Length: 122
Image 1 (tube, rainbow, N blue to C red):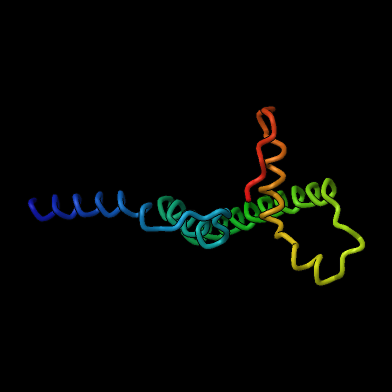
Image 2: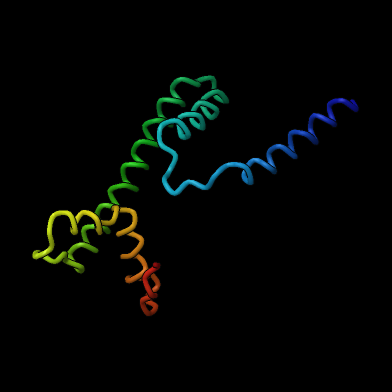
């Protein structure tokens, strides 16, 4: 009885500290994370492989939708901030931003709640 209580306390402490150790991810999990969750859920109903396959498919769709949204926002940002056609190829690509940076800048300029636009992050 005493030993199982120690294990329970250790498990609770480990689970409480896990978010502090793992890095925060900007993207959704993808196949591995969703597949693992699906496998655990499927294991509960004795269909672990089906759960893992379903979780993997869900993770791939979620990540695809996230990246698609980033590309759409980056395209909107490019439309509002055209590059100078007189710049050389080297200058254009040296100053180029990634899709994620452009999406962040677009979100800063177009807040969803209708408030005044914030200054873009430096």
